[in-house]
Length: 512
Image 1 (cartoon, rainbow, N blue to C red):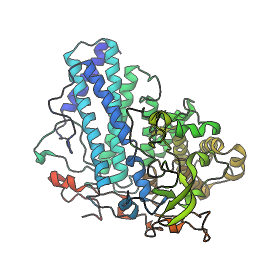
Image 2 (cartoon, helix red, strand yellow; image 1 turned 135 degrees about the horizontal axis):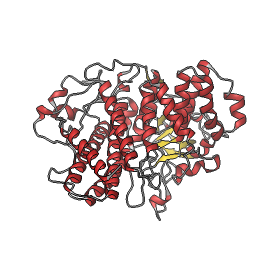
Image 3 (cartoon, rainbow, N blue to C red; image 1 turned 90 degrees about the vertical axis):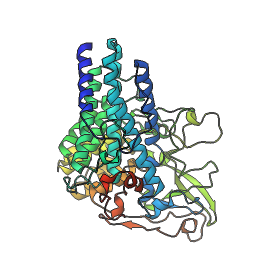
């Protein structure tokens, strides 16, 4: 594409954005006086978008919904951290819910600012072709980040696309596609339908892919968004929408390209400690000075005698002992608190990357976020083909993952013979094993239309009773949600109702 044609593409995007009259809701964190006056301004702002992504792909954004569900028990003496979510006491003013909602919308606001501003900057300047290419690629990233933010919000605050009336009024999100902050709250958008929300998510991904392709720029490494990362999110969203044929096609095409082979069993631990592995499609760059939030601090401590939450016994027994995930995901721990002392397994999936906590002798439990790995694509392809009743193809994409994590003999003896509902259950269990504590569980349960019962407590090695319950909060040890429990949708924060009259009466069911 010639520089002139690229300029026309950006100008067309500018015109399309300007035609939208929706105001930012909530307002972003950008001053109205800020401008993208130069190529350097645009690049610096783009760098800031990546910094925001470090936060929204780590910490509570990853683990909070998992703490809510069936995989973990709260340890006494945990300082009451995340206990409202754990206990199912979720309200429109719950701080963690409000913070996550606001952070995604702040990211959306800044993406809108960038998407609106870059074409105007190009119009004012005669950039060389290399710089125009660069800005096209940066624009692609902004569309991708906006799509990611809306998809995460939909996972948390909306019903399953498959099991809902997608055209029901106010079943989706408040959609904002232009940066037009205003004090006139009468112009703020109400909630869209679920279909409108997902159409925007998919449209943004299509635009991101188009711009990334047109730029001709291939990212130098997996610290940056590539067309593969865009396709990975497309496959995830298509599965959520029940479009199994397209989900399988996108996932299998990317797998079959061979770009991201599954990490070997010998190197699997490095995937989680050093954040290195062949299967990583996109990792959000972090270092000692610039990093995201501590994803592992709820599960580990430097004393080796404390944890806020430990896996249930059901989670521990999901894994075979020769599964390479076992050593990477779990570590022995001698818990010592007011309930007594006992040896348990704690989650060690986010131990902290030594390159990030540097010369300190103590981990900060921060790892580079890895939002997209090819392992998830194998699971998407297997589930989608299974939903299509194409058992051979489902097994074809399940086989490499099981073989990589265990071995070919285990697959042949235990997985290959499975068909029908037994295969479906195995695929779901395999997804549970692979993506444990990566923030997928809530969306999975809604997509499968199943509830949960929080599992049995781990056995303790030092108690005569051989039970760890003395270490744990006794309330809600066996908390259960039915498939239609209203708490599987989080409430729209009360703050939103205070500032936006258009969403009056549009709260999720069950909340007041």
